[in-house]
Length: 322
Image (cartoon, rainbow, N blue to C red; front, side, top):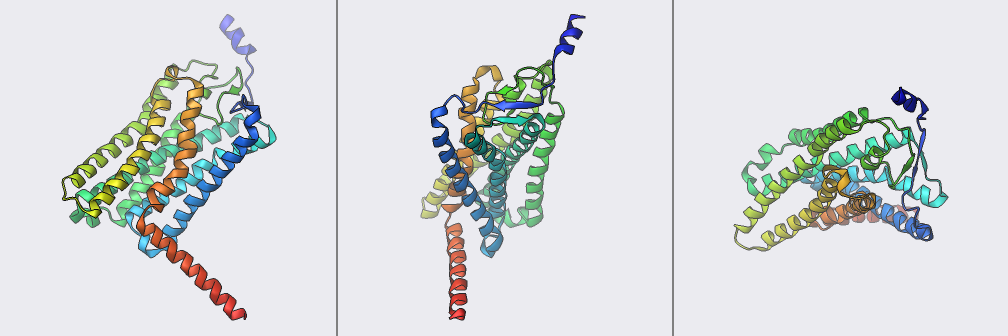
């Protein structure tokens, strides 16, 4: 009887308050400016890569097809977080409806999961190109690339859809100690038993993070082993430098995800969650265009060709008017 009475006295909440960095009121303007710069740089870098991959025929290869997908993904999932944060810092309004919160959670979780699978597909592509070059064109054909990319997107969205359907009811405190709607802080606001949800979420999160992470690491181990066993040449040194940069990004990205979603929630604080989240929501999307693409000679050549065509077109148009 007491349980029924307690349940009746609970009121289902209709909105959350994202505390974010509200405990740093003196730094709100500085944070807004910093995050705005990060967002603009992230969008500019990733959109530039997408444009280059689409318009330049020299980049119509499997590696750049996956890079284009990655840049599209980075643009989308950064846009699910930063615009809301910027509006909150500018206006001081930190409320978000429950439905809006769940939509943000759904798209962000799905896109992060997609990135995990895409990174694994990219590492497999590099494995075939470096370790099995004679079989590369046969295995990594257009149809297989399309299947890998489509599978990455669909699989992640399916997994997160299952998690969203398991979302519990919220009827207690409505303050989320985070700067966006994330699984861990939302779980702490649930008013029902979370045991089953935690177990299912742990299993599904592992399929999104641990499995592709292991595939990615194994692929790069084979790649580095193959490079180190070859005679030292300028090409080998370049491949080592590229793979090392990729591994740094992959390790940072997966490390923060595993720390947040696979390690039990009780093992770290929400403040630490915010620090981890900054890496994969802001720093990694901003750094990926530079590390994966703009350091690449072929991409730089494509950029020069694009700028050259635009300059020639403008000059021709200007000359025609004269």
